[in-house]
Image (tube, rainbow, N blue to C red; front, side, top):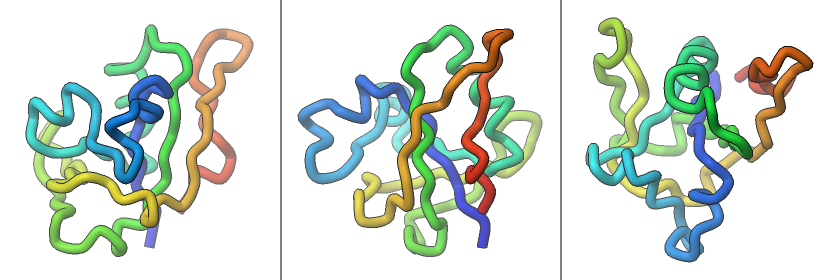
Length: 115
């Protein structure tokens, strides 16, 4: 099964309240779930919500490990996006990597962002 991805700012990921599990960004908490993206959705999500951000992290998760708290729901353009209705336990994280930018300033995803 393909991985799903949580995009977050390094500052949010390292907050003290996230010491045992990731509770989400301020937007996640306001919406009542953690926003994830599939590999295909990553470029659009990065540009739309993180275009001006620095120190953006990509957190890879196996969706099968998240159980029934993970739901695929319509969002941008009616496409189904993965939403987690629970904090993200670090035991379910496969890897975390900094998203770099290319010479033109565009996001360059890690080569192993493939599920």
